[in-house]
Length: 490
Image (cartoon, rainbow, N blue to C red; front, side, top):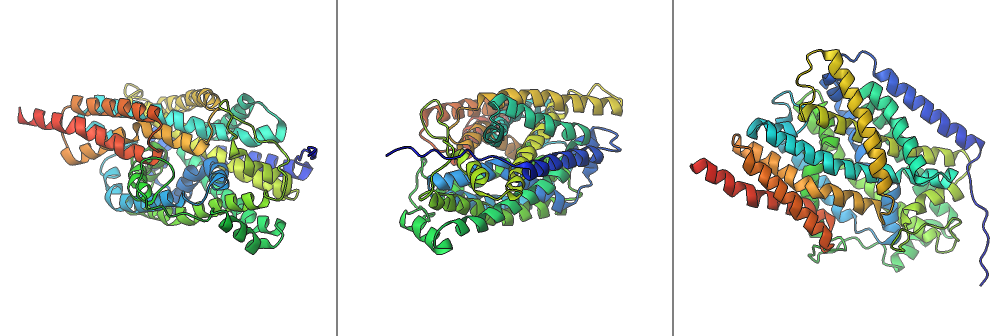
C-alpha cells in the first residue's frame, strides 16, 4: 500500500496572537506581584499571607503540570485506565497528611520540612536532607522541563536545547522578580487554563468520531482499555490496587508532605487550618482531574483507529515510540484555529508552572537549608542572593532537562527519579517527629544507605516506581533505628 502524504499542520495568525498575548500578560503579572518584597521570607514564603484556595490551585498546577497534560493521556492511549489505582492512593495520602502533618509546619518559623530534621538531629542532618532533595528534585524537575519542549518541537521545529532554554528563561523572569508569591498566583491562573483546555478536548474529540460518544466508548471497551482495577499483588508492572493504596500513599507522604515543591506552598499559608484546607481540596480534586486526562487518552486512541496520524512520533535510542507526542499532535492537526492556540497555551501554562515551582523550591532549599545566608545580616542582601540562587538553578535545570531527552515515558521517568531519595527524606522527617532529639550520624547513615539501596533497586528494573518511597523508607528505618537505640542506651 502506498504511503499517503498528509499536509503538515501548523498554527495560524490568531493562534500565535493568543500565545504571544498569554506570555506577555503572564510575565507582566508575575513581575508586578514582586513589588514590595523586603527579605527572603517574603521571597520564599510570601510573608505567610497567601489564601488557602490560591495555594491549593498552585499545588494542583504543580503536580499536574505538563506531565498530566501530555503524559497522562499518553499512558491511557498506550494502555488503559489502570493509573487510576495510583490516583486513589494520591487522594488518600493527601487527606492523611492534612490531618497529621500540617500542624508541625507551623510550630516554628521554617522554610522547608528538612528544617524539622535539623531541629531534631542537628544542622548536618538537615544539610544532608537538603542535598538529597536537590539531587532528586533536580532530576525530576529536569524531566518535567524536558516535556515542555515537545510542543515547540512540533510547532517550530526547534531543537530540544532551544525549546528548553525558551521555557526556563521565561519562567525564570517572573520567578526571579516575584518569588513564591508570583509562582502561586501565576500557577493558579495556569491551572484554570490547563483544566479548561482538558474539558474542551474531552467534549470535542467525540464530535470527530463517527457515532460520537457511544461509538468511541464501545471501541475502547472492546479493546479492554476501560479496565482499571487489578487486585493481583505485584511489585512490577502493570499498576495494581495494592500498588496504589499502599505504595502511592507513601509516595504522596513524600510529594505533599516532604517534597519542597509542594511543602513550600503549604508553608506559605496563613494558618494550620488553611494548610489543611489546601491539601484536602487537592485530595478531592485529583480524582476527577486525572480521570479527565486519562479518558482523553482513550478518546485519542479511538479517534486514531480510523484516522492517520499526520506527524510521525519520534523514537528514542532504544527504538521505542515516544507516545507522549500524541496529544500535542492531535491539538496541532485536528482542532480549529484560535482554539488550537488556547490549547497550546494550556500546555505552556502547565509547563511554566512546573518550571517556576522547581526554581523556587530549589533556590529555597539551597539557600536556607544549606545555610548559605546565615552570615548575611542585611535583609536586602539576603533577598539579592536568594534571587541569584534562582538563576543558578535555572541553568542547572536547562542542562539536566537536555540530558533527559531519551526517556520513553516522561511520567515513569520523573517519578522513578524522585523515588531515589523520597524514602530517605520521609524517614528523616518521621524520625524527627517521633524521636525529637538525637545525634546526626545514625540518621545520615540511614539516608545514605537508603539512597544507594534505591539506586540498586532502580538498576534492576524489577520494581515499579509507586513502591520506591515505601522501600526507601524501610531501608532508612532498618539502618537508622537500631543505631539510634544503641546510642540512647550508652
